[in-house]
Every structure is written in structure tokens, then in C-alpha cells.
Length: 201
Image (cartoon, rainbow, N blue to C red):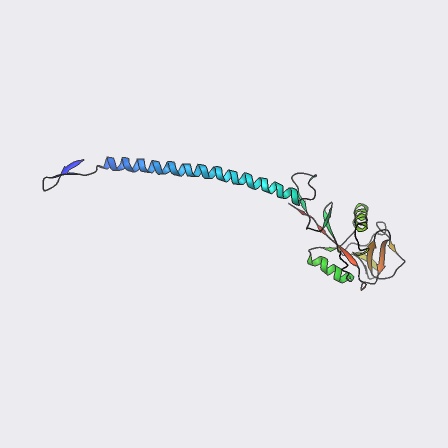
């Protein structure tokens, strides 16, 4: 819009309509750019989520010890531990031998405790696993408590589940493949078996 100033010269002065139209067009362009950026960012985010899911599935397949069971569940044991049903088992090796109490302390540091035999199937799994170890005698979590025998988890000894040999004497029990469960002085030094619940992810 043209106007005349005091000197008589004509000067251009913008009209409010023009300013509003310019602002609307400019803001529309900015809004379109923002929408485009969000759209491409959304696609990028979807791609990242897809990549993460694929990577997660690969990691799960590498870590899970029960991959053939329910696909929604994954059971994990620490490296160097054996998995059986709901538990992880660690068999000490390399000639490291300790007293019963020292063995239990090592297990506790690893978030575990000495082995507790809960049923015949577990006992059979442990016996087969011991046969594959170089060391022969392993402390387990059975000890004399007063006049009776007790497991480290507090359960009483069940002679129907396993028999402690009377060949030796002592207040702690070790297991050896082929010779069963034997008593020994708790200060004797043997290998040991730790047990803890497996982690489900």
C-alpha cells in the first residue's frame, strides 16, 4: 500500500492483510517442515525399535539355556554353571579344595548355597554331572545339626531320598559319583557344588 509522507513523496507501507498472509504462509511452511521431520524421525524410531527387537532376540537365543521350552520364557545361568530345571549348579574345579564352611562361604559370595538334593531326578542329574568332573569328592549342603541331619536351606534329611554311608564318620556330607553320599570331618578339604535358582527373563 502506498502512502504520501509530509514531503509529498510516495512511500510504500505494508498492509496488515499482507503481513498476516505472509505470517500464515511462513508458519505453514515451518509447520510442514516440522511434520516432515517428525514423520521421518518416527520412521527412524520404528527402524531402531525393529533393530533392537532383532538384536534382543539374538542375544536371548545366545543366553537362554532352555530355548526349546516356552518361547516367551528364557532361563539364564551364569557362565560356567550348569542348568537343570529351575536351578543353576556350579562345580568347583582346578584342584581348589576347601573345608565345608569355606565352600559354603564361596557359594554365598556367588549368590548361591551348597547343593540341596530335592528329588531323585535332581540327584540323578548331579550324579551324572559329577562323573564328568575331574575332581571326585564334592561337598554338598547336608550337615549334622545336633542329633540329626539338616540341609542348608533348613529342611530335614529324608533317608528315603538318599542314604548317607556309614563307612566314614563326620558331621558334613560329600558326594562322589559311584560311591554315593559320605560323612567326613567338616575341616577336611574337598571340591564343592553350589546351587541357586536360575534367572527368568
